[in-house]
Image (cartoon, rainbow, N blue to C red; front, side, top):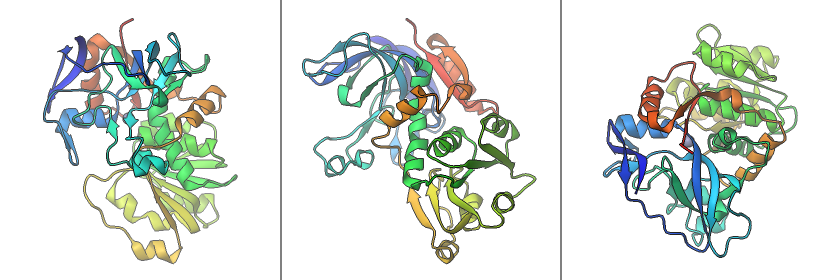
Amino acid sequence: MATSLVLERKGQLALRDIALDQDLSPTDVRIAVHTVGICGSDVHYYTHGKIGPFVVEQPMVLGHEASGTVVEVGAQVTHLKPGDRVCMEPGIPDAASRAAKLGIYNVDPAVRFWATPPVHGCLTPQVVHPAAYTYRLPDQVSFAQGAMVEPFAIGMQAALRARIQPGDIGLVTGAGPIGMMTALAALAGGCAKVLVADLAQPKLDIIGAYPGIETVNIRTTPAAQAIAEATDGWGADVVFECSGAAPAILGLPALARPGGTVVLVGMPVDPVPVDIVGLQAKELRIETVFRYANVYDRAISLIAAGKVDLSPLISATIPFADSIAAFDRAVEARDTDVKIQIRMPD
Ligand SMILES: [Zn+2]
């Protein structure tokens, strides 16, 4: 038994002991959790008790964005040893599934993902995890940065899906955490510059501080006007839709250049209208993103090389003992907060 952050039911969190299955198989590692980021999905389970078909029906430990230190390895594990600093990929597919064999294990229907009901998450002192989904952090990558790899991986997946070419002009609609991660991944992936559009100026100020990012406040300037001005009326090579907002999705055809690409990253809560003919008239290529597959190594390499610095996006680090307060702050969704992290006790 270990004190964990438990979502008892919608709207009720507790720091309490809970029995977890932590048997170590020969291919697993045991990890002392160091830092866990709070994700929008954790917050949504707290406030709404469900996301789509996933409903919290029994107490569940929250958290899926984690780094830590290996404390024990299974008999068949060769690439990790006790003392290694690591981060963990929270979705574990069935390795024998068709999706996993195709390399698209993120869309394996059998995937077990931390803090997605009924699977417990990692806001607990120790976790047991498959070594194959546990990644060693280079010395220059901190635990805090290691816990940012998970949200950054979604931006990486978006950048890979876009098939960016060097010198592309990117446009990101929506400056939430995932929009910011996507903008940075797009720059790292070869975009000459990336415009980020949102209506919350404090968010734009945070992401606009990065070289290569230009911001558009859509309260004063429509995104279509901004991208037209930036590209002599041609449009963005790649549009990353990260807001999930219906008007942004309806307006996508006006943002991309003829023959350009639209990557759908944001998730609308309900079905939304799409301008099919608008997309057809420019022969836009549409890509979708669901989590990520095979991107952790690349993400860690970019961070270790200093090409992507996620530290400015860590807005607060809160001790585990105060993690319920940390979640209540995340529920407030302050414009000045990007990522709130929880630090586990030593
Ligand atoms: Zn997340």
